[in-house]
Amino acid sequence: MDRVLALTASELRLILRNRTVLISTVAIPLGLGLFIALTNQGDGGLGGASLVAMQLALVLGMGIYVTATQTIVARRQSLVLKRLRTSGISDGGLLVATIAPASVLALAQLVLFGIFDVVLGIAMPTSPLALVLALVGGLALVVTAALATTVVTTSAERAQITTLPLFFVMIGAAVALALIPLSGWFQAIGLVPGAAIGVLTNVAYGGAWSGALVPVAALVLWPLLFGVLARRRFRWDPRAV
Image (cartoon, rainbow, N blue to C red; front, top):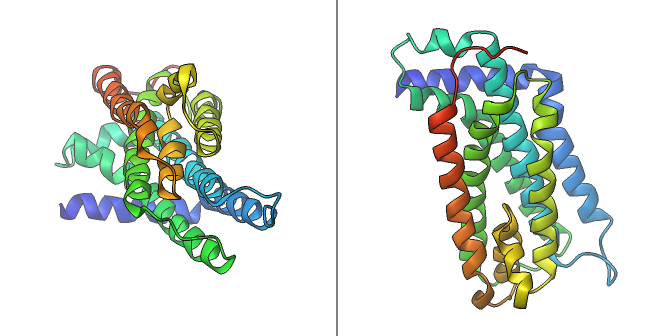
């Protein structure tokens, strides 16, 4: 455990010293989230559920999913991961230490968003449990998705392309389903990765639990699928570019 914590602290320092990574991990999602909150005040702006869903999806998608994918691929291509496997740290502990810094920074951003939203007068959630489920499920989704995406990513630079499809799907689904109730054939959209973030955020702000069954089931299923894929196909050796 001490070695995992030491490696986590080392990875966090690397992120804080790398301006490019720091901007993409912290500055962009934080700036976008604050900008959206500031420009969507009044009757014509986004409601509390859709605003919080967008902030949550931005931080999870850009702050963790994209960053974790880039970090793991960069460490793999520079042979760092392969060397660290001989350090006595388990494979699981090694991956946790590599991903944890981005997750810690993302959670800090969400705390800042929460404070900022309160200052702007955005209503508090009536069902905080739903918001917690959205966060926990979203974390599981983006972490396992990052591990799975490294399978098809040959360089840290290419991660900016390979992560785009899921990132945009997650953002779009989260925001759309925070606004639109699921009914009829539209319930199928609840199976899309990230849809549960929007649905659960809507529930947190007064929506009904009745339409959340399919999205919540998908929120459990997608991390399992990504986890299985990563377990079977994850590579520790550098991939040919």
